[in-house]
Image 1 (spheres, rainbow, N blue to C red):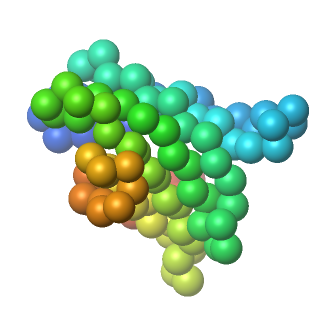
Image 2: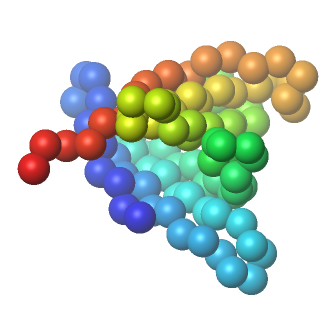
Length: 104
């Protein structure tokens, strides 16, 4: 699965998602136009796809990153991205959005 996205302030990027049959995990490589790279691994947890990885935070220190995609009853998918500075003891919202199918 290849995703292209555009955010506020002109930033844009893409991600590539694959199922790695050797590890039996999903893998995502995520990049943006500011040179940010995030590599995530994970799989299904209940009804959600949950992937985690590490990447530098705004202060340059490494943070644990977690992204969850959860199907909603109306057919949309919620993406909830959180980050942790304390190895998962507490989490802060980085992004919370809804995916919808494009018309056509």
